[in-house]
Amino acid sequence: METVFLIIALIIMIAGLIGTILPIIPSVPMVYLGYVIYGIANGWQDYGSTVMIVFGLVTVFVLVLDYVAGAIGAKRFGGSRLGAIGAIVGALVGVI
Image 1 (tube, rainbow, N blue to C red):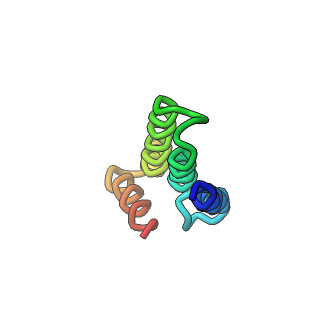
Image 2 (tube, rainbow, N blue to C red; image 1 turned 90 degrees about the horizontal axis):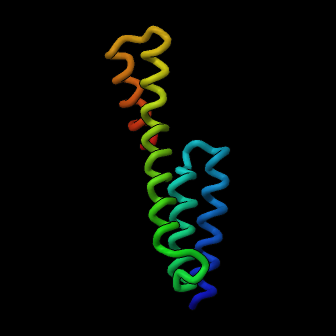
């Protein structure tokens, strides 16, 4: 059963890596999910909960930064407040 989890984790991680090229695939969360599945498969022997919490916080930070960066860029280069809000909404709707 451990082998099945490891294969699933590997497939998810590879899909996440492909997501760095194809923007429709959420790459960072998929790689993190792969690490979580890998941790479950081997009983958290290779890394503990502290590492997973740090990885989780980094994952959340990267996702928030990804959505907010468009708004910051729009505002910094002369966009209006409505343009910044539109950048955030467009990023969120673009995922769907």
